Image (cartoon, rainbow, N blue to C red; front, side, top):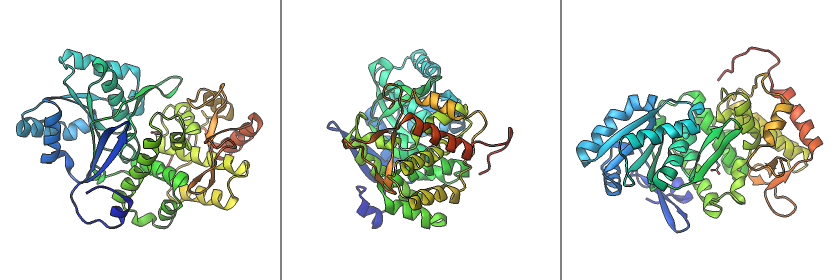
Length: 390
Ligand code: GLY
């Protein structure tokens, strides 16, 4: 069944749903369904792509699924499967880990016919797809996201990359997989922190494109249907990425809340999750939108209360100051002459266009400074040591 907004509202079948991303004539099918990983259709698709498989995953997932997937693909589909394991955590998303994966692949004699399966959260997906894009100038890739965050963001759009000490995702490539398999059953035991991590991106989709989705998140807190939220997020991201694959225009709206969010992650040495960082970033971008008189106070307060309602910790350590944020912002990918530019909203579900009908707003230095001072006064902890509660 092909995924459309209509089919979401009127599901007719429990078989996997397919959503095709079409970029420059290349079709990237996304299969969404329960227990896909051990299905015959999955095995057959892999078998048709290559006989030599390398799975890149993290230690935790390898312990749970590594042997089982290897056994399934080798025994039932006569494939050769090797696994490369990395340590979990954002701090692994470096040039060094990419080099480690490449060297392991060379040592194991992986040639151009290799199919790389990236199996994990955003870190694994971003790292492995960047590696696949450069290994022997490019090998086939499959993505299997296992976290809510990766399902609704990294799984779609072809952005692979690594962090550097100068900023997040500053080195990378656009490279699309042959297939993406999204299996919501990986989320059956989703811890609260991981739920909030992914939900932040779903809230972002609502704030930039859909008041309906925002209202649903606001009103149905205890009755959220994760499968439906994943599918709605994928449909929104698909539409944006298909219009602007290379992120030269409209795709920047996906960066709502990320300008400051990335700085916060870096300043907090990645002890702050991506979801927490962009939640604070979205509150900041909404505050800027309010200050620039795009957004009404009523909407601003509603946005703030949504994050409070889901119990986002909204707390920063004393490592963060307005001056330090200001410095890291000047290195942001979307900065122009070192001046950061922001995605702003004019109401819930609608981006504010710039006077020349673009989407990235310049903000005067004084306005940025006073907003950062408000932000740090409001969210930086007054205590030297504290714990974030979920
Ligand atoms: N995560 C932002 C993008 O894919 O453009």
